Structure formats: C-alpha cells, structure tokens
Image 1: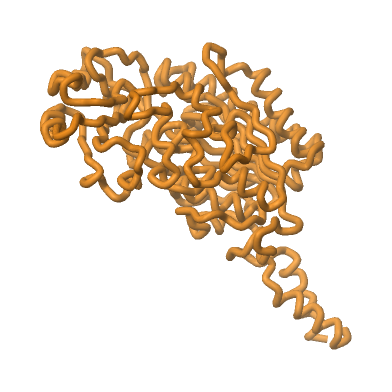
Image 2 (image 1 turned 90 degrees about the horizontal axis):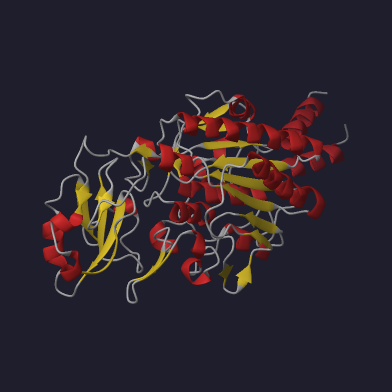
Length: 441
C-alpha cells in the first residue's frame, strides 16, 4: 500500500467520529421515536408474559429502572424528559394548571394547549431540533400542543377532553401507523408518542389487578406491531426507538384497614389557607394566609403519614425549592396514603405522586435501533438524563440542561451525533484494521 493512502487512512482515524457541526444536525444521524406509556412501573413486565419487551431487551438496551423527578406526576415528569431540566427549572409543577391569586384550576387535559403553563423559558427538544433543521412531531405527548416563544411543534396531535377510552387497541395501532408514516413519507426526524395506559387502569383497579396485567400484555402486542411495521416501511435501519414512562404506581391503602389523611381535622383550611390543591393522591400544595405559615406547618405536622415541607427546609434532592410557581408549603404523603382536604372524596385504588425514591414510583426504560447496543443492561439512572441521550442520537446541540450523557453513553454502539464521548464507530474500527494490515506488509 502506498504511503499516500496510509496517510489518508490515518487522517480519517484522527477525525473524531462524534463531532458534528455546531448548531446543526449531524450528517447521517438517525431518526428518533420516543414512546411513553403513562404509569408503566418498572416491574410491570415481571408478572405478565411480554415476548416483545423481552425480545426488545435482547435486541437493544434495558435499564434496571429509572427514577422520575419530584414530582411523580404526568406533566412535570414528561416535561423533565423532553427538556432535561428539573421541575424547579421548567416550572410545570403539577398536572393541573393553577393560579394562586385567582384560585383558577384547570384540569390536566385542558392544559394541553395552554402555552402559558408550558412556556416558561425552557425549550423542549421538539423546538431545539426544529431550530437546528429537523422536522419534529408530537402525538398526544404532554407539552406538544403548546407554543414556545411563539413557535409551535411542526406537527402536534393533542388529546383533549375526557370520557373516551384510552385502551382501544385498534386506535393504538392506528397511532403507530400515523407516526411511522411521518418518518417514512415526510422525513420527520423526531416524534414523541404518548399512551395513557397503564396509568388509567392502575388508578381505577390498582396495580395488582388482573386488568392491569391485561393492559400490559396489550402494550407488549403493540410494541410487536411497531417493530413489524418498522420493518415493512424500511425504517429498522434508520430509526432509534426509546420506550419509557413518567412514574410508577402503588396500591392505595383504603379504609377500614388504615385511617386516611383528612387535613381539616388538624387545621381550619378556610381560615388558614388562601389556595390549595390537596385531593390529588400523594402530593399536595398549600398557600397559607399572610402570617399564618408557621401555624399551618405546626398543625399539619401532627397529621399521621404525612411530611410537611416549606421551600426553606425542602431537600435539595427534590429540585423544587427554587420554583417561583410552587406555593410555599408542600405536602407529601407516605406511600399509599391519599391526601384529603375536608372530606374523603378520593376513590382511586392505585396512585402516584409519592416520593420518587420509592420503588413503586420507578419507571421503565427500553431502547433499540441502529445506534443502540444489543442485549445490554444499564444501571438505574434519573430520567433527566434521557434528554442529552436524545440530543446525541439526533446529532444536535443540546440546550442547557441538568442531565449528563455519562449515565447513558455506554448504551451506544458508537459515538453518534454531536460532540460526545462513546465507542469508536464501526468505520473507524475497520480503517484501523486496514492500517494495521498495511503496516505489516
């Protein structure tokens, strides 16, 4: 082999395979589909036959579990995943949109197009990808129907209203067909897809109920259908897929076995509080009337199975204390106990919103595709670290975030996308072999 060819090969080896042009998507980066199954607890596949999830773990990556942010609720957790920021930074601090001055409270699904709730100066991945030249879409994913600095997601399908079932298997498959057509026919590079199960069945029936197991089996069938349709559309070699959730689920301890928490037994809420969201599972927020904060905290400290925090004494690990939007008093029930304000009105048999350190709040993570290793089991990590992983897969420059690629880089077969560390690419390894062979001639 001539010395000129050797020099060219050595020059190729010395070029970092992961380096991408700053501010634009890396050439050759693959597309990414992020799927979230609301309330899919980390161990839900252990008591159900899930051949497609099992196959996915063999063909890709499985994390032992991942930890959601505080709060373990749908909107806050999903927005942490799509921004890589803690809740105190992105300020989506509850499922309900609220105003502590007017006492306005907007139910979860009705917030989906309310940009004033979502747009707090932190950019979600859709907008970051679009600013760097990629087409992005959202299908039912929380936050996808809002605008950010006046900019909307390229395409958003928003779930609105209530009363319609979330477990229609035909509809689930149609949604898969729709988002895959965005990739195969319209060159979308990032799509997020959300399903409301198994959260709904976990709430209504409880996490140990046979109906929950049936829904998990349905999810497994859907993932098998997804992979089949990816193959039929020629997407398997250019589409990375991440499957995750937002929180887990635990059994609610109902009377007569235990006493439920009724806060009005310990203080007069009408006289001492000016704003509250309390009848909402294991998490509550409260604004005391002026000068009454110490009295409120002292009274609630007497309630069983409840921990009371002010922003001043809140653990730093919660990443909530710097929130401007969050009221000054935060209430956290022990695992399985509901918060009730004046009367026992909560009927759920399963719930979330509890401390994110509880194993019942942990969530699932699976990933497969051309950039992921096969049959790799990852150690647990926080969901905030999914964001830099997605930026790497897309080959784009990340916005400021609280995540780190160090927790997920070992999942990848090569250094892909913009600027990070990783294993040598297959092309680099091949070139190295050629150089070694040539040098031995």
